[in-house]
Image (cartoon, rainbow, N blue to C red; front, side):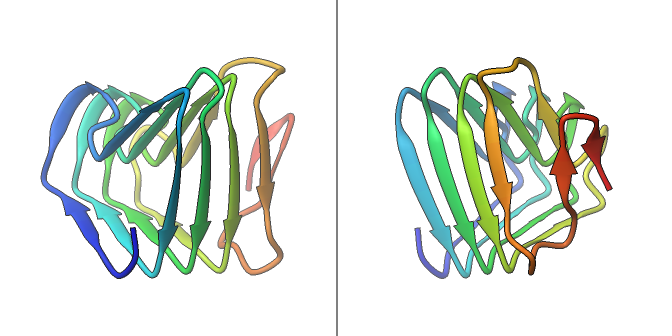
Length: 115
């Protein structure tokens, strides 16, 4: 997706975008005002991969992973903003999950959580 907006959606998994064993790239795009039980903005499940570049993930709501939920998946984020997502910006559920937040990302994560 390039220069796109995904907003005002709801689902059990991935209110804005749900990936299952697939991949997506978001460039200069916004995922906002979505809701789900897991992954209000984006939900990456089993061997999924997402790349976010110059993206905004904001004002999404979920029980786990308001902005981004990762399960056995990976995400690479650069020059992107995660803002005002509820319950949290990032949730990762297992050790086979990987994420790489570039130096220009709005927050950084490690195994103990996100700042």
